[in-house]
Length: 329
Image (tube, rainbow, N blue to C red; front, side):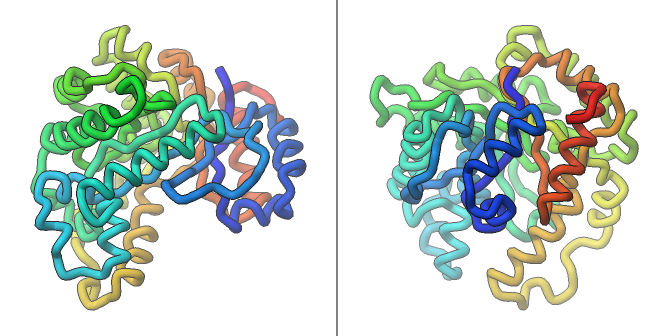
């Protein structure tokens, strides 16, 4: 198993290491990590040493489902930045081209995999939870989008292995085994696997408020799947999220007052602040977290955290590695 941490080429990540990749490599060695899972999108990549990149996280265009099933969405009266943020393009062909370019970026850095979200949510949905679609509908539209996109690539296969990640919005959340199996059966290519995001699964379960219970709940969901599906979980985003009480309160409160009067940028900030309270990206502290890893046996484990500075990142890494391995690094 290769142990990684999430990383991006954003200045907020690079500046922690004085924009020096030697410092990044030294940090990885210090903490016993094999490399990074790097966020890439469809835009041209700058020149940097690719050696530490083991996998990538592809962009998530959260409203893709709606635009894919109803092309009138592309012509709605909305901020153009919001339209691209939601749909990933200005029409179907643009969506496909941008996705393919992201895959080419992944291949260009020799990534072994690319993480892809199979989920749908619009900005106000994160407060209302009034999604208006089923998991199956989202997975059907996603499979159609993927099949069409991948069919345009050499050999009809993605250039890097697609790792489908679970979220807690409509789509692949892993709670419905029949829906998951249906999604698998809808794919027309073979170069794929799953990434299990432990925190996202806790969010989907919704009643996780203490770590021991949350770990047990994750294991209960995984136990519903046959061995051949567990074997397809080749990646893991490893972190803890205990936001059950917060989610229940927001479900009662609904959309914040004045939300619809805000600009797109202001609404996005409000949404991201809210999502960060749901998806906490905290380190595991209970050694029973090893049971999740032992059950799945992923090829890649990414310690996935959201941090504001280097000391916070180091603290989260050390805390989680201690729980997982029983030792400090």
